[in-house]
Image (tube, rainbow, N blue to C red; front, side, top):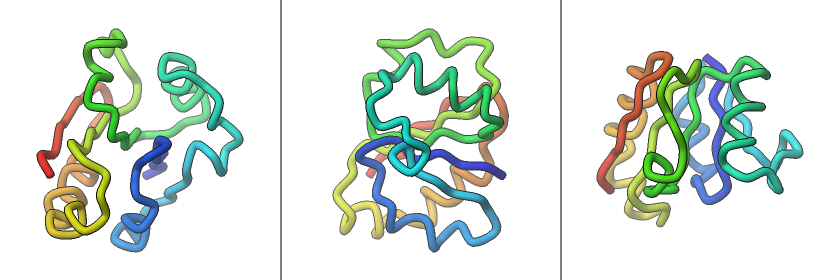
Length: 105
């Protein structure tokens, strides 16, 4: 599965997803794109899951008919994320096209 981490998503999650191709928006050269544009280019580039800490994404964007799954982490502080890493990984691995999942950290 191809997974895109948004700005603010802890990159330290990556080693917990060894079976997947994980890259960041910055690594893709997309760090200046706004969320609507970022979702579009991620879908066009064939990403399957978008992981973000933008808890307002669902209010700001039309998420219906998306080709990729969206997983939102309610916080980005690594210590807090690490404490819930199994839930985070499970949400990412269970994600399917068009789904929206929020993981409370």
